[in-house]
Image: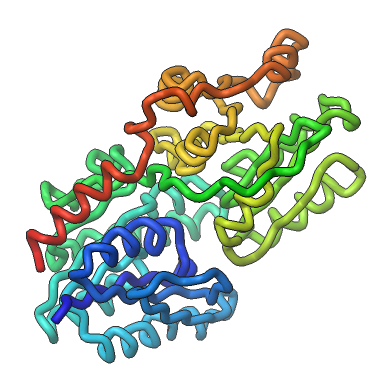
Length: 366
């Protein structure tokens, strides 16, 4: 009988690039595991045989529903009775440890975010509130870490930022997993700057809006596509872009399937990563940087030594200051951007190196 594995989150969709596309599919193809993924949003994407999805939709703005969601997930976990439980958010740590104490299963904590830094340094809550929340989450992680068998870290920097992981960790970076891009893309008349993924002030959405204003609307366009969790940020984006005819907004309160994002990429797309200087992101490598390079899309990124090394190695784009006027010399270089990734060794940005580490790790535990 195959070992049962549950990957659970309250924050991510059941079809999530990391949990489903990478970890789930990598494990199920071995034929040794029964994969179950619990997430907070349903999806219309097609699923892979051997992976069972349990969507648990709830209104996260409703305090009672948000409080009860972990216990709804707990009931599903009890029904499945996994040999290995992987939780992907701090909100599930209490119920995960409770389950472990009852059933003596193996427990992993998959850390895609440094929640303490996110709460403390991103302006999603009032100053006093975010400090209290940050301390609460970190104390919870510290106390419950003693019950966790192993930590999966999506960023190398987490091994230094998160002291509670000790030596019980494996770095599984969110590298690019190749997808089928053989569909013919429509020829673009305009250069399309492309901002995708999580849409927020810290990730530079307003800098991108200011950036596109400096270009001729007949020749350049900005596409903003992704998930905006902050309602006030969403309203401000709509207001600021309302009278700019070369901005296209495809923004949702829920995560947008990766396939929908990829389908918007055309023949003259340039990926934007206008991240603001922030302690919560400065040491991380954005997943979409790997994805843009893997898809053969040149990029414009904020100044960051780690990112600069990656784009220089793959001749993938430019580092610029999104907060200053774009000089004509940079505009000229942007017009000539291409990428050398199709003729370059991409081993350092491809998921397969992480897949090997994942499979070896799971074999050690179940």
